[in-house]
Amino acid sequence: MQPEAVTTIRAPAPVGPYNQAVKAGGVLYCSGQIALDPNTGLMVGAGDVEAETRQVLSNLKAVLEAGGSSPEQVLRTTVFLADLGDFALVNAVYAELFSDGVSPARACVEVAALPRGARVEIDCIALSS
Image (cartoon, rainbow, N blue to C red; front, top):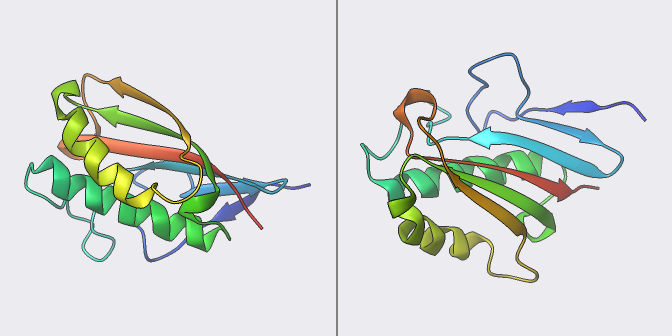
């Protein structure tokens, strides 16, 4: 089985040498998404972590759908926060997308910095058709 690159114009183009996702053996490996508007390439939210999280999850959902998956098929996520103090706000928005069925396994870590000054980045692994 050959890995297959997954791309969609409904999510921001990669800002480096990677794919939005790679699909192999019925599994979709989604790269981390930050709050970039896919139409403009600019950050969304002006520092509002809830607005950033909504855009991040919108981007991630678009990549999932392009790869033949959905939020309900996500097995694991990693949440990267520039400030762990934002955890409760991010968690509340996150729960809106991942509230149906079995919630994915998750890791959440505070990092020194994220690309483009983002406050949140999320990646995931999901089942795919």
